[in-house]
Every structure is written in structure tokens, then in C-alpha cells.
Length: 134
Image (tube, rainbow, N blue to C red):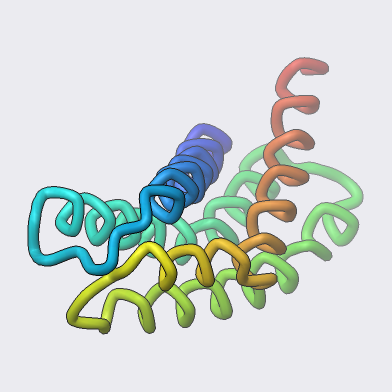
């Protein structure tokens, strides 16, 4: 389960990095070209990964029988809230007929997405740390 959480976290980070590059390129619209298809693919993959983060972490805590469980699980509400807000923002962007660099730049700046990234990095580091100590 830890591997799945880390894979989802990596997919979200890759999306964020792709969005930074896309935003910097100054595309007025995605125009249905390869760039547009790629930004939509990356955003869709990230939304799927984001939706699975909290569930994968809960399964990891239970599978590893981490104690005290309530300390490990207290972050789940944060992950779920950040995920819900981030997916809502991504879905709004994906609903647009054209995705400009400016739109992606605004998504990058979203406090919701940044909070999710920070939370997933924190949990990922805890998972890596625990894996190294066992």
C-alpha cells in the first residue's frame, strides 16, 4: 500500500511540474493539439491519483498496524479535504474548451493544490522514514 500512495504522490508532483512548464510557455489556448492533449491527460491522471491518496494511506496505516493509529490517521481528514478541493479545481479547468497557460498558472497558484502537495510530501516522507526503520 505504501508503494501505491507514493506512486499517486509522484503522479501529482509530475502534474504540478508539467503545469509549471506549460504555464511558462505562454499558450493562449490548447487548440486541441498535442500540448492540449498532454495537459488534459496529466490533469486527469493527477485527479485520479488525488482521489486515491487518503484511501491508500488509511490502508497503509492499517496494513502496517501503525501505533498509535489515531496519530497516523489524524491527517486523513486533511488529505481528504485537500483532495476534494484540488479535484474540484482541476475539474473546473478540464471543463474548459480551451486550456491556456494563464489558466494553468492560476491552478498552480491554487492554495488547495499547494496544500495537497505539502500534505502528500509530509505523509510520503513519513512512509519512507518508517520503511527505512523497519
